[in-house]
Image (tube, helix red, strand yellow):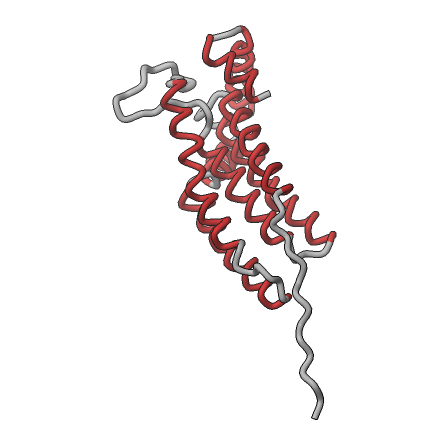
Length: 209
């Protein structure tokens, strides 16, 4: 899906009609409903993709995960911290070069300014997907099955909300958001299968005197 969408954006292919159709439908719906609440919610969800929001959540989750693994006796209890830090640094490395290469104008169709990289893929969506997604993966390492499901839901809500909020607020094309969901999903899929989990070490029992 990511390759298909990227190819269509690069060649200005027919799939981009989906962007225009979606934008028209959303604008018509927004005009018909004329709901200040929905507009505020769209803005609020969009803001959850800010690096100033998602990255601190990611780093804090890494620290909490490390503390929990230390208490549980994991051999590599410290690993969630560098994973969180590296993920925070990976986000701009994945998004900024792609934005610069595709140089896609935003929904308003204005030419890119000298200080703009482009709209494809969505940086807010990628930040939310990786920030909240990796945070959930790290915390899930010591969670029970029910806790893992709760963490997955807690991460999915803002990730979906950011993408939908960006489209609702006319900040991004739909395919910008879809591409970042795909990109973040590939990273999460890889990280979930990376052998990060180490069994808790057996605690040495002291001989009784």
